[in-house]
Image (cartoon, rainbow, N blue to C red; front, side, top):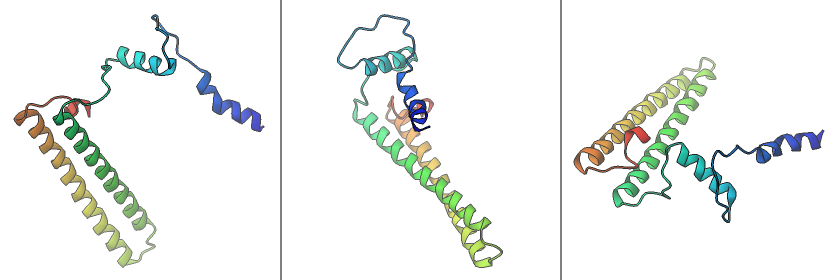
Length: 135
């Protein structure tokens, strides 16, 4: 039974997509295949942001995304606390205030992202990582 479970977990490693073109052999063929798939999907082969604006934009997007995830987790935890309050008015009011604060925080984050997009694309004339279509 354990051998069968191991094989099921290892199976995705051995499955490989069929190539439609010629792949030149290099030091790491798996990375080359991933780059080939990404190139055919429409992504460029760049390694990362190159200008200061793109680096700052990536940092701001990552930071705002992490804050958004934190506020969503707060909303879920407050909802769980509300559902498990068992009629305790103090727990219900505390959970309600946490939900309100988390929703306000989420709105602030969305507004901050919209302001960053405006500053980056309209005022500075940036491109790349702060483009809303790539978010």
